[in-house]
Length: 125
Image 1 (cartoon, rainbow, N blue to C red):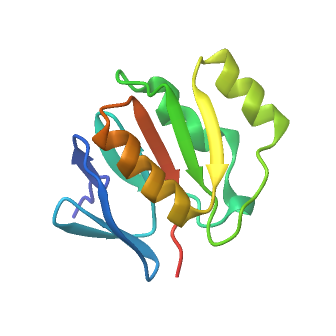
Image 2 (spheres, one colour):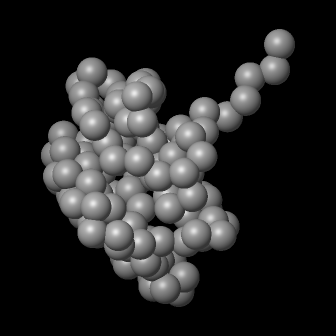
């Protein structure tokens, strides 16, 4: 049996988060998610210590690259490494980090305003 990548084509607000996952578009997903203007997919990292520059590659490959990416850092806020800031600046994508809850709420608000926004959200309990 072949497993396909968890992927929701299109965009949707985050309806709920917690218990190690997210609810959106009448579906649920266990684990972290990457929300881009053209799809919501599973995102590999589980904690900020797990996040690498390679985990952002899909953001820059996307045909619908967002103007802003919100990074949900889990239950506590964490600083953005300078190397990530430089990488995002080179790709002309703004990066802002906050707790996952704040990032999900901000993502929903900006999405409702029709803004070009994405979110990389670490799952929280």
